[in-house]
Length: 226
Image (cartoon, rainbow, N blue to C red; front, side, top):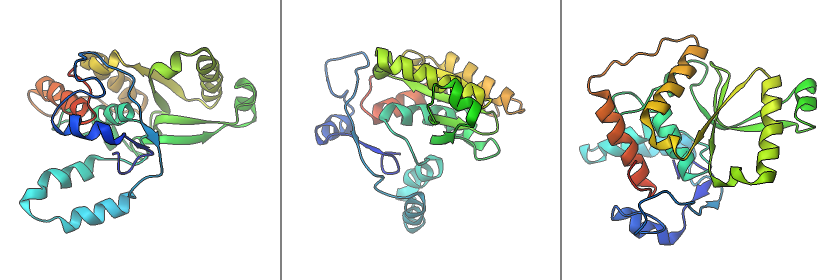
């Protein structure tokens, strides 16, 4: 996801994460606001899939599966974790929203407003949706600490009004909810219902799989266990 996304972690994050530690503070047992840099994607989805086809040996099985699950467009480590939970197949511990029709989940999708939506948004012309589910007309937003600032709250309110004018429902996930599997499940059920699909599990022991998957995703970006 980092290869395909528009963010990069600092070099000093590499070693702690590789050794299974928490970054940036090894001693911290709580979430911190991670620094990351904006950049162009290192690879396209086509390039990554081509590399996956080349990696044919059994030793690359996990890599090939990661390529099948991954999606382009993530703008932060926590957006990657959010997509991993909402989008990944249920057999891994996700909620399989990426399998919904009309493209599943599109990360950082630009939605241009019509004239009335622009007026509702106080002249904001478009919204960048963290995770847009076209079949459900839902935008799932991850709100980190930056969204708590006054200017950000004002802008978020305006863009959300514009999205409402376009018939799009905004669901917000904060840092606490990204630790709460029951809350994430309820959000996934709302997405399925809005998409006109029935939500049901087709695997046994799904809660343990979800807990393991969430913590592996968090560990992959240096966050403490949920």
